[in-house]
Structure formats: C-alpha cells, structure tokens
Image 1 (cartoon, helix red, strand yellow):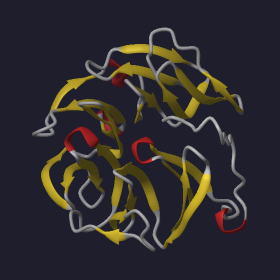
Image 2 (tube, rainbow, N blue to C red):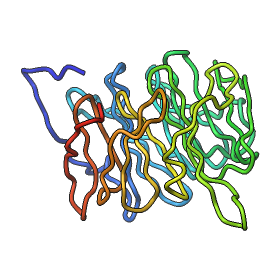
Image 3 (tube, rainbow, N blue to C red):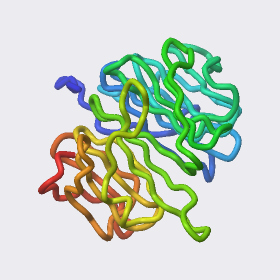
Length: 263
C-alpha cells in the first residue's frame, strides 16, 4: 500500500464517535487493495466497527453490531464477521451489516480467500465444520471430527486450519492441517502439532503464524508446514509483512528478528 508523500499521517486518535468502549478488546483488519483499515472494538454481545482510509488515516464510517463477534476478514471493500448469529457482511458504505444465508447459526472463524474470490468459515453449529462461501452461498463443506477453537489462515493458494480436539484419555490433541482448496480434505500436516496441545493459526505475508494462547510463537512454511522459526517468550497477537513482524513480548510491542521466516 502506497502512502501519499504529501500528507503522511502516522496515527489517528480514537475519540468521540470513533472511541472504543470501556473494557472492550480491539483488533485490526486491513484491506490493502481497498485502502481500508477497520478497528474492531469487541465486548461480550456487541462490536464497534470503525472504518478508516488506511493511507491517509482518515475516519470514514462507524457501525455498531448487536452480536458477539468472534472473527473478521476483509475482501473487496467488504468486512465479513463471524458472529453469534451467523456470517455478517458490512458492504462498502452500508449503514449496518447483513446476515448471509450461507450459514444458519453461529460462526466461529472466517478467512478471505481472494485468489478464488470466496470465504472459508467455521460453522459453530457443527463442531469442526469448514464451509466454502461464495457469492453469499454455501458450497463445499467438510467436517473435522470434534475440532474445538478452530482458526483459519490463508496465504496465497494455501489454506490452513488449526485448533484442537479430543485426544486419548480425555486429553486434547492439536490439529494443524493444510487443506485441498477444492475438497477441503487435509493434504498436509505440520509437526508443530506434536509439540503443543492447543493451536491458533493466522496468516502472514508468505508464511503461517502459530500461537497457543500462552507464550511462544512459531512461524511455519505455508506450503509444507515446516517449522521455520520459534520465539519462546513472544505471544500473540502477531502482525507482519514481508521481512517484518511484531508481537507482544513481556508486555512490550517488539519487532521480531526474522532469519528463516519471510513474515
């Protein structure tokens, strides 16, 4: 994304209509192609959606959603929300969100797949159900047993699912799998699943980030799942571009030194 050299703004205050509610958690969603940045303020049963022009850091739009939001993804200027009542779409300039008919019930995760012009979601009404959503309608659907706390990461052509499910003796086992883009069948796993009990995956620019909800961040190859680097004291969230990444480490926001990971 090119930032205009004649009007560079490196920050914008979240005040007035664009302030976040007290005790809400926040996350960022960037749609570089549409030059849009969303700040999501999340509380138990509602969410604030604050839209900004990303290049100029100008506030554009403010929407309140009366539902619990679990995840979000941006594509073609739309913001898609995984909510407690379904898959919601905030269209460009719309006054509110619209529920898409693709999934009936709660959605726990959503990821944009711009290469194939579609979304991949996790249907919370059926544990482990991964669903393709195209033009607002459901397509391919596949269920991964008793997958719990699932997450999706899409980097280029590659689709990864992470989470955990029931293991032997009542314990948990981690799942980190690359999916076939047509059938959604698992075609590759990562050895990192043997090292941890619970997994969250998130996309980098070229690689996949893996966290566990505790300290420790891994970078794995988006094609074959090879572990490229590990930072034992770092923790989520991770955000990155090519050659650069930032995490929380000991209460500070710090850059990661990338040696084997592309970011």
